Image 1 (cartoon, rainbow, N blue to C red):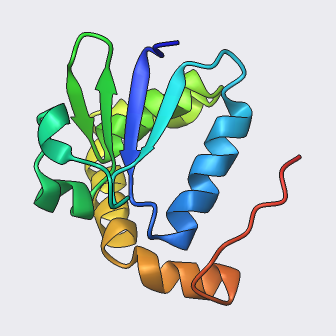
Image 2: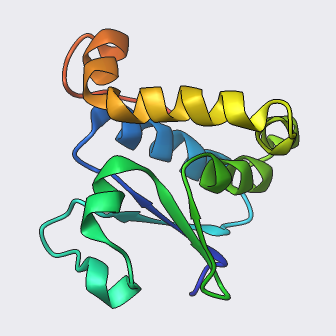
Length: 128
């Protein structure tokens, strides 16, 4: 089954894996396909993606092949998973620049956040 949105995320990041597990649990309409872009068998070229950029920020591709990166990707993800107010906040002209700054900071230090928030490199999520 082809899903309308494909998320390319950093599977080597514990915090990222935890977030993806939470999103998957909230994806009741099964619109999201999750792809670990750091998996050894993943080939970025087959998706027309640049490996260096993939290591820096989350990417989302829609069914038409449009690519969304960082905050723009999360705006779609949050809308699809039932958080329209977060999606709206990320797109408002006054708050989008703030959201981008916050996202870039979290993305840059995601491995450290994994240790801080989970107490170790790995984050476990006990689904609802």
